[in-house]
Image 1 (cartoon, rainbow, N blue to C red):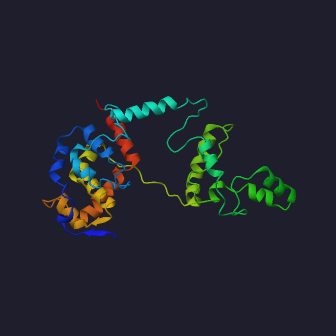
Image 2 (image 1 turned 180 degrees about the horizontal axis):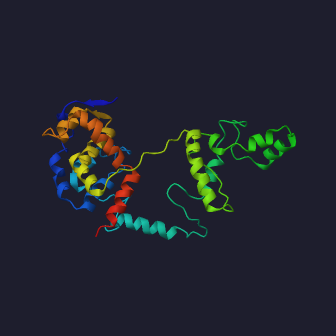
Image 3 (image 1 turned 60 degrees about the vertical axis):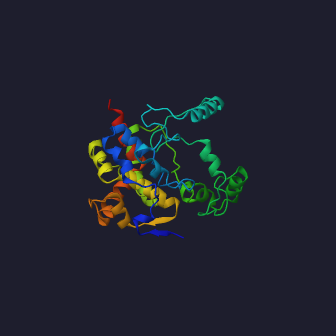
Length: 283
């Protein structure tokens, strides 16, 4: 059952806004690190230590799983040793195709996944998505028009658990024709599969984003919301307002309409990657 937090006194004793004072004077990269290392804190419940971020404030330690976004700091030695053990056991790639953001070649991972799934839609509902030679042979021999009806069914429409769009690309076509077709098909696929285009990453240059991270108290807000999630609590907007803005700079309405929407956008992977690339150009 969710516990409602309607008083600042109900927040964990480890919370202190003073712990975050150093954020104001941090270098650009160090401030970004404090945000970057918390990127999972609103998605993964830290039930073992709900107030982990609140304990550290502006000194949140390097997240071994993510490492340093700029490759300038080293992970802890025990983690590096585990990485070395893994790399020692890992075999080099013999076959490899290039890939980019959102686009990669079909691999055996996907085929193995598809091989275990039954269709929950289509003519052969309840049967395996990947059909064997006997099933195909029976279809063809029946000669009742079902062969093409079954074999042409798009994999993505057979089951909702298939997330990535399974397509083939014929590179015998010219690049301009492929690009034109892809641009035309994207909005159609989104409509047919009910997958809206994601919002754009956070806008503005780093200077404006940095100012908002500090002025909106984004870092302590993440820590409070992480504790909230891990303890099945619900902190009222009023408590957030008096806790994060004790001098009244922001009220409940501003937190709901401005601060939280900015947090939702800034913590997304595409926003973090955009900022990381911008800061990586700094000396």
